[in-house]
Amino acid sequence: MQQLIDNINGVIWSPALIYLCLAAGLFFSICTRFAQVRHIKEMWRLLFSGKESAQGISSFQALAISLSGRVGTGNIAGVAAAIGFGGPGAIFWMWLVAFLGAATAYVESTLAQIYKEEDQGQFRGGPAYYIEKAMGQKWYAIIFALATILACGFLLPGVQANSIGNAMATAFGDNQLMDTGFGMINSAKVITGSVICVVLAFIIFGGVKRIAHVTQVVVPFMALAYIAVALSIIVLNIEQVPGIFAMILSDAFTPMAGVGAAIGWGVKRGVYSNEAGQGTGPHAAAAAHVQHPAQQGLVQAFSIYIDTLFICTATALMILITGAYNVHGASEGLLLVQNLPQDVAANSPAFTQMAIDRAFAGVGKPFVAIALLFFSFTTLLAYYYIAETNVAYIRKTFKIPGMIFALKCLILASVFYGTIKTASLAWGLGDIGVGLMAWLNIVGILIIFCMARPAVKALRDYEAQKKAGVKEYRFEPTKLGIKNAHYWEGKE
Image (cartoon, rainbow, N blue to C red; front, top):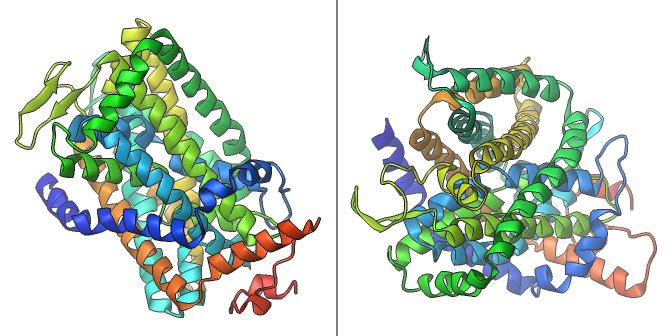
């Protein structure tokens, strides 16, 4: 099974996808005149400007939901894997994919706002919606929706749950085994999986508003607490920081594991962590109640910075400052750098736990376990919401009763199983989900750009109104030559 998963990933995550992610980000950066730099101040202002409505959530709540998807196990275990298999230089490529990916995030999230719909009293939108309306290709939209349901409803939850289970077993487990239908399993993992499923069920059966209210409290708290610990380690070792940055930059182009490994792992884990171009962020962006689509696009662009430039960098600095990492070579069993025992898994939270333990003895394992619990749990909420949105899209065409209920049962089963299965298999399945969505979404938004350039037109319209000093922004798609933006057309 593991070999099959690895072979599929070898096809999906070929160099073509890696360079497509970078090229799309550069292309959209140029086309928007690097809006991710020019509008940083506006991004910050917009974070707290929107308000919740009966149909939609606020800009900050949408940011919290999308961040709950972006900020997850990729920020802890994913960064460790990038260093473990690509060397310290992989972090540079994570930074680059975040900087360029912010422009991609703006485009896809603005498209989600432009082409959103009102469905059963709430806003719905995302790649499936804008692919159908802007490209006019419903078959392509259905393929994306099905791939997303598979990825977010089944494949990706296993990665998040697996990291929680491993971290809890390492921190609090007593190595007692239970005889279950899945074989002999660590009792801590069984208990963890059961508790997560009960709490997750309570929230997802409460709808999008309950998800938004939970994430807007939990996400800022968990991110600030994690960064505070990282800053403590950085300050205590401040004299090492210039050397660490120099090592990251020098190893990015002449790395110990080869340039291809650094780029490949940096981009793969960068896309997995910040999800720019993957097509997950637009679902939350579409649910926001805003005056102009470009506003939520800019807010979502800022979320890429929070995820990668702040949280992923914090993890990387902790690991590199404390030297709590190994670097694996191309052949199995070969270690190019060995600072830890050979059996310490790179595809796990172990590097991060050991890094914190070296700075604060006895703190690393429980702190990372609790951080992963919050990080990964809120990501599970985001995955459910994304999958539900695509089920709602499919339901418009195929009137199958009970689809939402079936999805809830599927994601709960995936979470419990993911808590107890092997890490390598979980990550492999997750990579397949990320790769499929990224291929379909990036190709889609590039085609849409070539056809009508709606996201760039919306940005220029917003900039013109901002320059004119308007107090209430308006978006009139027909005047901009944007078709099928039915929600906004009703407001003209």
